Length: 242
Image (cartoon, rainbow, N blue to C red; front, side, top):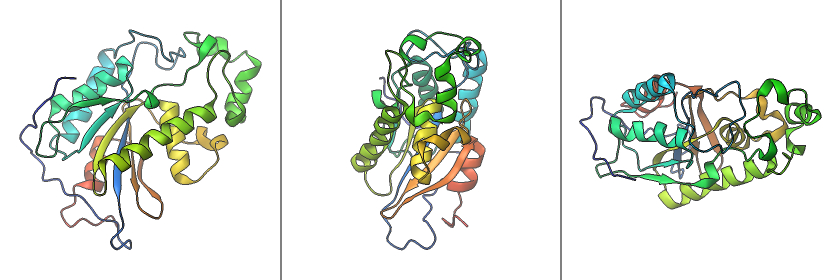
């Protein structure tokens, strides 16, 4: 991907510490779901190629980029699917970085669920399938026909985040742009709840979920929030999270 230099910083961002965790090793990931597409909410798009953000999604991505402008990020990682790449690219164009040029890294493990034979079908049609009830009530048992299981999706998505945490190291802050189900699965893991409960978590289009990984446990700072809310959590000059 083309590298972008950081724009002028209108906000003085600071890296907050976690109160009560002295000398804790922390890495912060900002999980971003891609913006809206023409199929969002009506079709199970999966890995359908060539699906781009629509006008609403581009507006969402631009608004999030404005909210995060100047944030000192160490990396920006994305699912390789176009709707995520376009959302992440808007953040680069908005001006982020940690005093050095920041490029876009692609990681297939952050990609959407491989829905197999369900890919491209309408949600209304899929709701008639017997497997649909399993997906909704017992997702840890769901395996999509000629696709993958939701257990495997959670395993690969969490592994991606953990690997990037190690790669970027302590005190790093980075964005990972992904899809609804992988983000919910990562958040469920961070909360220590079973995958069967992950539908209780929300990850709306172009929302942000912020997780800080300490040497003791993950801490969710924000779930299904907005860019403005990130500012409330991460841009406090005193570094307090209280």
